[in-house]
Length: 113
Image (cartoon, rainbow, N blue to C red; front, side, top):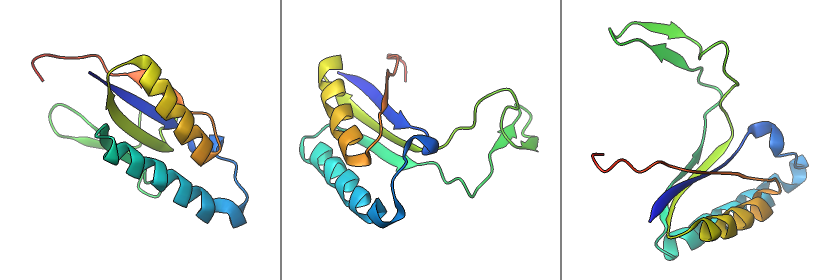
């Protein structure tokens, strides 16, 4: 079993304001289905009102993220699934609920973690 990241940036979700509640209900319903199926690991979104902080090895901090990297925002779901095909199936269900395409990535397994 591998863990898959299903995600989208905030700008990808273009939904009329009066439909956001419906989208939220649909997205939460899919997450409840992942829990019932026993494949749920984690889901949530980046709190965009809290700025990132870069933390160095010595513990010093610097406001902001890497200046050369794209902004990290949006929604994320991590599922543990037996195959990429299963991950694609769940990603499609999330895409339908959120009304935007989802990016699918697989976590590299580290046997020591």
